[in-house]
Amino acid sequence: MRLEPELQQFVDAIAAHPLPDDLRELRAISESALPQLQGAPQPVAHVIEHAVIARDGHALEVRLYTPEGLPDGPAPALLFAHGGGWFQCSLAVYDGPCRALANASGCVIVAVGYRLAPEHPFPLPLHDVADAWSWLLANAVSLGLDPQRLAIGGDSAGGNLAAACCLRLRDLGLPQPRHQLLLYPALDAGMGSDSYREYASGYYLSAELMQRCWQAYLGDPAAPPALASPAHATDLHGLAPASVLSCEHDPLRDEAEQYALRLQAAGIDCTQERLPGMVHACIHLHTVSASTDVAIQRAGALLRQALS
Image (cartoon, rainbow, N blue to C red; front, side, top):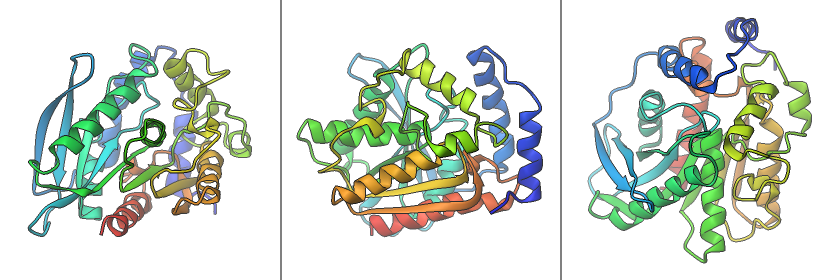
């Protein structure tokens, strides 16, 4: 399916302007531009902030988004790790998408502000998300959440962190989340798929930028550990049921779909859907085209079903 005219015009404009060499400059641009692209944030019942103490004593910011119309009683919840190539974005940038996902899913979204590369490379972002998961498990009841209906997920780099958390929990012999929700996840540092070649440039996320993301996160991505690049995991048995969404015009499309196939081959209950006509990070592009809302709507529907 071809890009609709509004999206085509947007990706053409992005491609016409070279990205700055300094990742910190690119980080600042995203912090300003993405909320404007998202449009007005949806109302939710309430947003509560907590501080989670990580294993090294650092205080992580966590935000709980409770949707409107949530029934009485313990609520289902999703620990959400935001995207941004491990080096950019924040809870502030993702306020709009988290509100929309809470309302679409009928679940409390627990967004974690993990530390960013390159200042904090692998494995620190993974440790932060894992520590937030441990905190969520330990405090679910006091937070009004159902300990039996807790999921983990994220988009892009956040999808990587969610998938890696599930691998880590399995390897440690700890219980899995009820579900893992992976939205156009970055799973393979090898970057060798057909979709990387087909959509290397001109489709919002470029292969060149993704290479810089992996470099910031890993330093040398030539031989990545499985907890950094889950596609390199040799065994996917024993992981949580999953929903994997890919975007048609995305360099990361094939690795997401191949990971879903491998989960299914390992006996994991996994739903995989490709979003036709969509580009990477489309959850931010409501003001470009309302058609991009399909990503949040499908993610919300799959999460609602998984945690019902």
